[in-house]
Every structure is written in structure tokens, then in C-alpha cells.
Length: 317
Image (cartoon, rainbow, N blue to C red; front, side, top):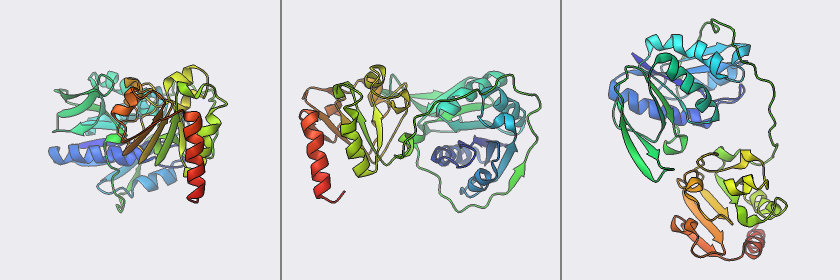
């Protein structure tokens, strides 16, 4: 049989989370001795399908282009994925907002237990996943004949490109979707997208107000960084909730993560502790964030961040 990866995209661009999910799928396929295919489901996905076909190690790309799939709603995705599973042993998708929406429905329709947010592949039926907000790792063995798995993108390296897989168009969803996308409200920014940025600077409750986020936004613009926030800052209304980093927000693993005025609750650490280098700025020297920080600066952020901005300016940023 084979393994199916569901591509993450916005109908125009293939997301990096797809490459990382393919890496997990290839590790599973190697143990099972089978092939990996990619499903691109959306509307106007010709370019996305072509990009998916370039990922190394992929046998073929299945393209399903239909208006009901434009937002990859759970009901519409079910109509596409479930019939395909007769030919696959496992289906994998990135553990993102989109994947978290449709994968549980697919698992329910297949009558199997979903294995969520894996960070490692031990064998064809055994996987590693974080539990307790990432404070422990569980090794999970599944006896289900069909595996439904979401992949933690920050735990895997992106698959290389250079492939030339054929693109095969498959049939439209058999039944019209019972749900409908109405609208969305997204904050617009010229900065990098949070989960894809190489540098992230986040503010916490210590920022004091939404207006004070301008302090770290200046540094972010100098570094070409994305701006994030702790849940405390989001709950206080300082910034929109799509800026939240943590267990109930976005999981990031940039090359550099700067935490400003963030104490370091375990829920926040679960979303950023895989960052390559972590810098913490906090006036409380006992703040938990310093336990995982590579570099700690005990200082009042309202003095420290402007000093950092001035030094970056001197350095030509």
C-alpha cells in the first residue's frame, strides 16, 4: 500500500509544513517499505500541485480542484480523503489549525484513533508525541489498520526538492458540503508569517499595554522578525489572538526567539522551546523563562529593548 500526505497551502503557495510532514511520511514509508503520495485539495491549485511534485521522495501528487475545498473545511475534506483511504495505510497532515480541523473527522469516519502532533517515528506503528505541554514525551503504539496522524512541523526537517512526481487529477467530492465558509478577520502585516519566520520576538504581560508593543515592533523591523505574544498578553487585549505563541496558540521553532516580558509558563514554553537560540529579557531573575534561555538579560524591558534597538542601529540593521 502507500502513505498519503495532505498538503498545507493557501491555494496559491505550498506551505513549508508540507515538506516537514513529507519527511515524517518518508520515515514511516521506509519502515513499511511503501511509497508516499501528496494530496492537494483546494481551488485553483495548479501551481500548488506543481510545487508539491518537486518534493523529493514523492511518488505522485493527487490534485482535487473544487470550490468546496477552497478553505479545506472538515466536511469537504472528508468527502475527498475517506474514499482514497482504500489505497493507503496511513494519512498524515501538518498539526496546524487547518489540519486540526479536518483530521479528527477523517479519523472518526475511518473509525480509528487519531495520533496527534507526533515528533518522531519509531516504526510503522510506533510514534513519539509530546504530552503535558511538552514536558514529557510519550511513545504511542497503534494497532489500527489505518493510521491518521498529525505531524508537529517544528520537530522535522523539511524534505528536499528536486523531484518530478506526476500530477494526477482525481474526482470532485461526491456530496456537496453541509458547511459553508462565511468570512474571516485577519490582521495584516508586512512582517514574516509567525510560524515560518527565522526570527521571532514576542511580548508578554510585562509589556503593560498594546501601545507598548511598538517598542518590540521596532526591533522586529530591524531584524526582519515576526512579532508574537504570550497568552497573557493576548487575553489582556494587547495584541490579536493570531499572534499567540504557545500550547493553545502557534508552535514556532525559529533560529532566534526573543522573549520580552514573558515569565515562561509551561503553556508558552510548549510553543517555542524548540527554537534554536532563545533570548529572554525579564526584570525577574527567577522567571521560569531563564531556565530554558540560552541567553538571559535581567533588566527592565523598557530600558533593555531601546538599548537593543540602539545597538542594532549601530551595527547597521
